[in-house]
Image (tube, rainbow over all chains, first blue to last red):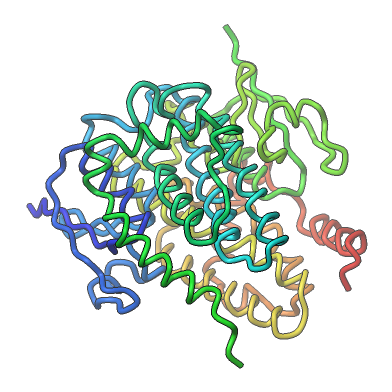
Length: 224
Length: 219
């Protein structure tokens, strides 16, 4: 029976990173396959015909796509170091905050990344800070969203700490404000200090260079 | 100790309908509380302070929001009856994938069919049909997305059937002509009491859309 585990990813993708963090936390051996985006391999198109995106986890030849779906799959197959809580209400809360991070925090940070004009940029950054402040409420004063150890939301939202710092540096805005969101700032620091987490994050200057390139592309004047 | 289950909902919401179906499938006794979305109750604002939206399930005083998260919660708590997600992890992942696909595409594209005109509307209609065809393909020869019984994806998608009529009237196209198997599936779902009790009349939904258009000044 084919039990091989392959992860199709892209080095700079936060979504692939989530899956790597989850696999590493569970001590699962896997083969990483780098997709050279924007080129897409025929294997990727075969394994994710609907969205044609990474990450895709292929377990015993069977593909699973969409990072949060993959995370829940891994949690159900490999039961050590569970990332979702046992209690149903706590599970619902975890899914809620992971969704909030994706649907509200990520896009609002992206908006402050691409908005031009000082006034508009300041307004976009203010909105992003509001979403991050709301996310802080989800921590409920705990060290991690998962409690004393990291869980589903920490892994899903952890990238925001890295992304926010990149955006702050490239477009010169303040996003993770130590004064107004001290707990969130502390959480990002604790999360990114963990060995399992640290060892998967690409080098800062590589990420910075990549993000600068990304910024140039996104803010290039539209060609008619 | 008896469970206290309250659902804060809005009659026309496809997201609310998902939760209604799930509760009915599980035979859960619950209190339905219709919300006025133009004048939100303090209970709604207290129970869903982040999004201030329905549906919200309040189970013994504790709130759960975001319709698919609520459906999964109901499936987990009342696990002895009418399981919605399969037991195999890979099958569960597939069900979650397709439910996520429905969430990502159907409501947004459907809304564009009545909120926009011209090229934007045509593009939305085209993409909506493409997405529905993909879902039809995924359904295949099975009676339900869940296989022999109603499952997670069925519950996620079937409420939109009540909005198809409005999309068709406004967009001047026929979903049934393009996706006959999907409409067959929807009618099959409606044979189930949990679904027929939870879904609303499509003419009423159409009337609601027209009222919304007037209110928002959409031509």
